[in-house]
Image (cartoon, rainbow over all chains, first blue to last red; front, top):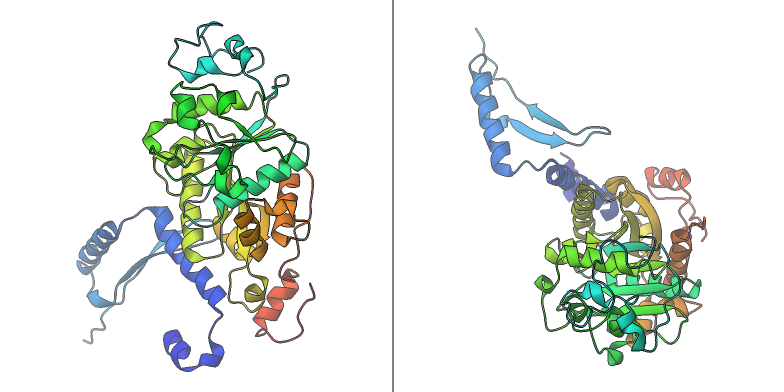
Length: 86
Length: 314
């Protein structure tokens, strides 16, 4: 949504300075934690395996990211559940 | 570190001629008595400060030359070392390229005494350059030799400034080997700040105190329009102390063309910024140049409100 806003609503485009800062913060979180992409992928696979034993999850919608916090960075997994009607 | 040649220099007086280690060729060696020029005063306990950045082209050499010159103008006894072996440049930036005879590799390999390799900048009372070798590579010097060299020089000088090569490989390891403190130079660009972050990590991993930052080539007009990261942004991201902010200034191009430091040009804004940084290194509390008209929270409010409203005056 934000992406669409950026594409179409040029008025509300954030300044490039703040974009740079945001991009930098994200890339540094990755750099600092020193978790290479293949490790992140392995974590993701393992989370899927564990959670799917108990609930039906939307595997494509899973997001595993490191997010910067004020004191500590956190590993955040966002796992969408599949709705089942019974 | 207080008297004579110190424990690191076990070579007895007079053994210099046969000793392959440069340590025996240090200026206190009586064998060097016949060498004219450079007068070395009583023992000092100076500081070794390495100027580094990770990324190339952000202004390390310009910063080293200007801080060295500014400190010399402030009556400090200064030596600047070009640690970029194979790609030497500090000599041309300082306008001393025609006077090189020996270089740092000659010193560590014992072909000359330190004082023979030091080039005195005659425009100032106490400014010297130890040039890099141009025809060798980074492996010609190792960190232990560099530490020995720095440890010795700081007994003779108030400031030993080391101009580090770009990168994080051997040249970087050499350059920080003898450092007491590190200055990181960066520009407000994503790539430069990212590299600076990595280098800060490496410096701290080496047991050195947290580096201080010089933010170089700030363009006030771009910052005012929000199209360049501010010094607050960069400091927040890197979480280090700010040592100074240097504006992007054409006087740097001009002074470098002439082989003069910008700090010699009284109207140069960048030169002024470097002089301020030199004074901060001496412990003075010098306010930052107001480059962007930023007024702290007021400025942030204005940004929040969509960048409208009046502009703070310079």
